[in-house]
Image (cartoon, rainbow, N blue to C red; front, side):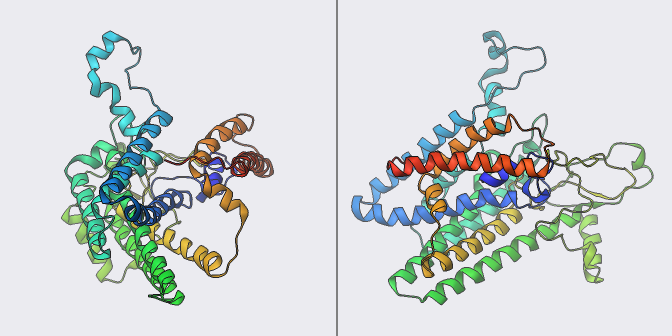
Length: 412
């Protein structure tokens, strides 16, 4: 988070350190790891609290904690209402636009970022947080299905326009953000079974590895649906603007499916299989390119392009393909740390310092980042960019380390 949030806006930053909306970059894998960690910790704290306080108090505490986080998120992210040009936000204009007119932009764009998504997703999974692995897996699948249905009915079009595009899946993003969260609960189960001696270390590692691989492959496989939306403009379309969003983003027209199936059955894999994660589609149209991309962003109407759709890996859309893959990657990264730290006994203090005060670190890094970046031009050379990051990270670490030494922690 510290790395990609700071570097992503600079021209010299590695391409994968920015959010590009139409594929899964390295930067896009960071936020799902928060949800994975939340799911792991929810199962961990739940079992302890239920044993000491009882079931009702445990549920009440979980809801109270999530609501408190939601309030903090709304206060932190803020946001101003959308008003037409020349209109000021005064009582008369408020009476005209109404309550919904005053808050719809905040709901769509400003509020639903990491912290609010965590709060809402945590409440969403409460009905199954104590349930068996099979029931949690079924709930995960149900959440994805519900997300797809709602996007088909209305949500994809609303979330992607007009005037403002939502981010991180928007108000209904919790349905798919619950995927890495629930996968985190599975990881906790396997670690607990290892600690209790019901499975061996190799058994716990084997399960995590197998499921991480399965989830990554499943996410990539689902993302192949994005190839349904490849477009080869004809001579008539070259004379008019081409659409960015597909008119049928969830359930494609039969002509698109037939063309894709023909390529698949003919063994024309390059025209049927989606690009791997971390690889930008060669002809995808990015309606909101990341700021560090200085390349020409215009699209030649005579060239092939791909319409924006529900199946591509996209953090902006909160698509199932993206979150299934990212959940698998989060599990694989956790497995690495489990082997190195839990089994190998190796620790690095900087991770502990950041981890024990994660919420303060989240708020603090935004403030320090803004201050350091204010004296750094976006086109600063590569060496200057890394020096700036070093200063930024050192300042954050020093303040968090000072709080750690004084036993000052912020927990909800």
